[in-house]
Length: 409
Image (tube, rainbow, N blue to C red; front, side, top):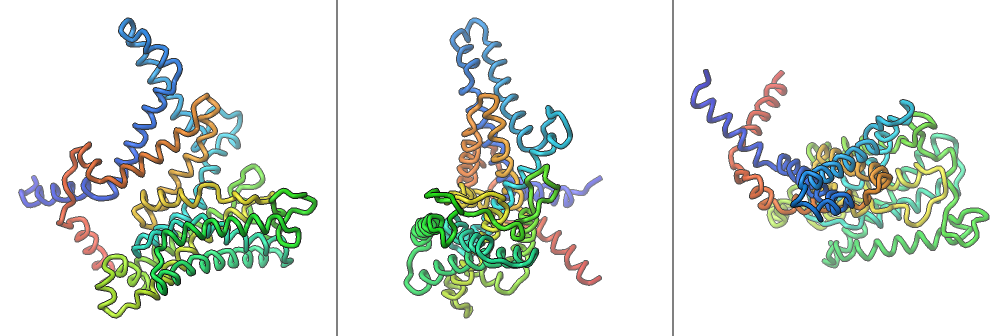
């Protein structure tokens, strides 16, 4: 039999869980899928036709609506997780590998944006940093000859360094001139896109041999391509593993390192950090450089994971999707990892939804509403009648106690 004190502790812990950010993020995802289901229903011709005689046979409209939802989300599952209608096991498992492939650059870019958030900076220049890093990687992978293995490492390091330098430029301008990072990163996105297009049109730089005037690069040399993880049957390459390493590095940097403590302190209270002796301007430069470095891993995925020539739109929507991934992941390493996998599944599953006649933009609608609910915590709390955030920290105290016991052992 539990005592009143134990019951009170469990009740407090439960309230802390349901009022926490992680649970609210989960509910935001659920609400996003609910809105997506509504969108599927009202985009179904069978449902709209059944509405014309709804009062006579309401079950027809309900059945058509449920069928639209079931078909839509089953198609999303088959396109992103497991295709149970495939003819063989290789084809059946291809969707999950595609999800991981799409998730790799999203996770890496999400980490870069998340780091900026933790320092109080809004880095929306991930798109430009990806392009600038890809520009450097493509030059090394197509115009420099190096042995197998060394070539890949050098191209990857150059890409990450170039993206970090591009990010550091934003921090430098903010520190020295007070320029707002949002405006600077937006402008640098256009600069990077212009530089990449120019380079892809010059045969002495990156233009594809015998490619005419098409803005396209030569494919990266075989010695500089990221190896596939499961053979030629799948396109998943080692870039995903590099992104996983990036998650571990991000966690250590932000939670265990001295400079990570400075990053968090500046982000939490700028004036207090300055009073404590932290060089805030220098921290801005370091933070944007580190943010760009993580985004550079996404550039490695895009530039060195391809076996064909690259075009100036190689970043797709990764740079802006990374903002959503960082928000959904609450700017934590594990959170960004899970959010990147979710959005990778959306990207992998969208074509399968289009095959059954459903607009692939449904996944964009779901993502948009997830961000909306993430950005509006009071709305989510009102919908689910959640308690206000708890000031008590029962779970945190319990976890701290376990860590202290482990340290003593």
